[in-house]
Image (cartoon, rainbow, N blue to C red; front, side, top):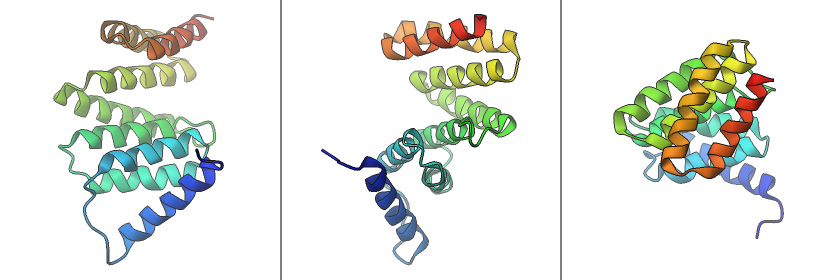
Length: 162
């Protein structure tokens, strides 16, 4: 069990970045752990590391890969953070991730993109667009039996209606 997850994530992230910029740099073969680390850094509030890792994944992965869609979604989530809120960049990232995910039949990621777009539109005052995306996410999560995410989107819908 990690006693200091934030410090551990930071150390791993710095090592990844150092290796990717040096002579040892090689294509990312195991993109999943890098994406997961970027997501962990975001959740821990380590925005600089999350952004660096997200950009590294985005640059290093072929656009045709499923991980590229996840990396793009991560960059959208980073642009959502209150300390980095950038609605235009966020919407562009989510739409790009949505297109990639739909093309590959990645239904959970498609639903996450709709949730992200719903949150964005709610936050920027576009209530009708927010409701459309949140309804789509709700339907998809319900069909896939993703109860945790269904609860998240339902809470977002309640806030949207408040």
